[in-house]
Amino acid sequence: MTVKMKLCPKERYNIKCPYGREPDRIVVHNTGNDAPAINEITYMINRDEEVSFHFAVDDIEAVQGLPLDRNAWASGDGLGPGNMGGIHIEICYSKSGGERFDRAENNAAELIAKLLRERGWGLDRVTKHQDYDRKNCPHRTLALGWERFLEMVKKYLGDDCMDYERFKEFMDRYNRELEGKAPSGWAGEAWGWAREKGLLDGSAPRGPLTREQAAMVLSRVLPREEKA
Image (cartoon, rainbow, N blue to C red; front, side, top):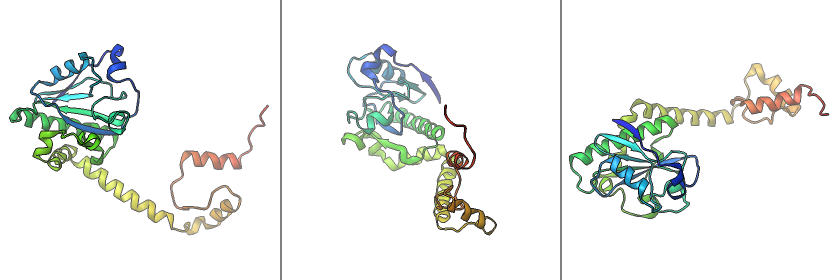
């Protein structure tokens, strides 16, 4: 599947995507008609109403209409988390369904997996329009089964999905274990000295050290030039 760009002109940002933001989720929609993706994007850009979305996906391609660092007016929650945080994806041919819709839905799952992988997100970031204003959308995808659709996305994530889930589980467990451990024997004396001098706060002796923590320790140990 190819992904094309037909971005909204900046002079129409005030109508279509007035706010800059960092996305934190994906929101899935069905278009409610039988037009191809390029037609959906073109119509979205040209109409004067505050209605907008980032991608339309049909049986052949995906077309991007808004920059991902701008909001969209798509989930009916005003300045809420759906509009302000979502990357909004419209799945085409949802009015009549059938083979074209099936292929469009499959392409949307592939696109969503790509977006998740690029951002290091898990499946928990994939939401539906219905989550924000109770509208029955994505209506045909919901009728066929939402969990079924998430499994389609997971299939495209493949080993990346499993690796992410296993890595997160491992790191959560590892960090919990570190919190309660004493320092290693070879470092016990040094750890006690550093804690006594106030260089470290005495917590998680075997936990990781960030660069900002290292900078704080160095600033307490090494002399710094007097300010003029």
